[in-house]
Image (cartoon, rainbow, N blue to C red; front, side):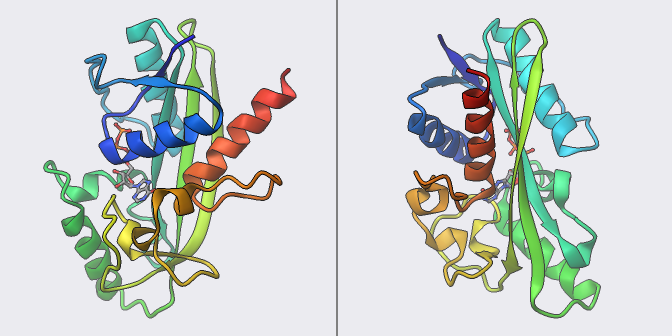
Length: 204
Ligand code: ITT
């Protein structure tokens, strides 16, 4: 069977494709199918992930997997949170978004360590509307100036707890490794995929 990867974000698409390969699943993206991008009107990660998954499943008449994710900064009371993509403006310039986070921290007089976490909600929806969601989180701190050449979103400013490299300095394999002994993977997205995989196994 085919699965729609319900995202229009190319950085995310690359990561979701790679993570799905761990489970031998291939997907076709919402972009490739020319599915319209639904407006993210939800007030939570779960609401937005479910809205995107349901729209794609209905549009393609296939199961669809959506990801709603974002960066939550403690000193900013969880911002940018569900607005993480929108902080990059209509042209989706994340150099601008990263600067905005730094400026916002200055504005509130925050001092390092700038504690933050990434959240990823994965929602799987079926054409009949049935939907299931899974969560992954990773905690760490923000560093300025940004570090690394992999410049997907907020990766160059996020240093995961206990490590010395930012997500921007890691290869995709490092960021997404899913240990075979069942211990948690590194990224929020890897962890959400692990929760997803566990639920599939429990159901068989
Ligand atoms: P779709 O809705 O089409 O999937 P989007 O970019 O609008 O794409 P979101 O609303 O979920 O997706 O926005 C989440 C933003 O958070 C995303 O644009 C990234 O910039 C950022 N983000 C999420 N996961 C990230 C990661 O692993 N590394 C860096 N930034 C990330």
